[in-house]
Length: 95
Image (cartoon, rainbow, N blue to C red):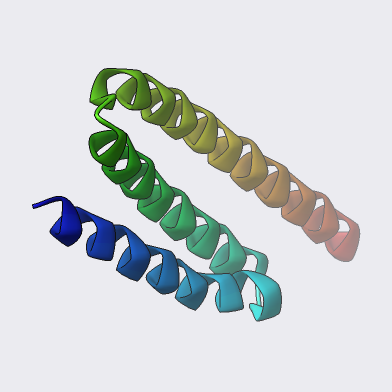
């Protein structure tokens, strides 16, 4: 059973590279933001799998909850910043 979770963790690490391409070469900021959220979600699952493999799932669940909260708040802050900067640009264009 541990082998299955180990191979799942290795596969998940490889799958994280797919949205990483979008973060680096995304055409818009929103594409990059969505890819960052996808990486964060996969990382949460990866940390939980690692916790199961080490036999300390209780400690790693706390870490994943903190990581999820920080990722969510970071996404909200970035989205708010991008939307407010686009409004300022739009106001300048209207004048």
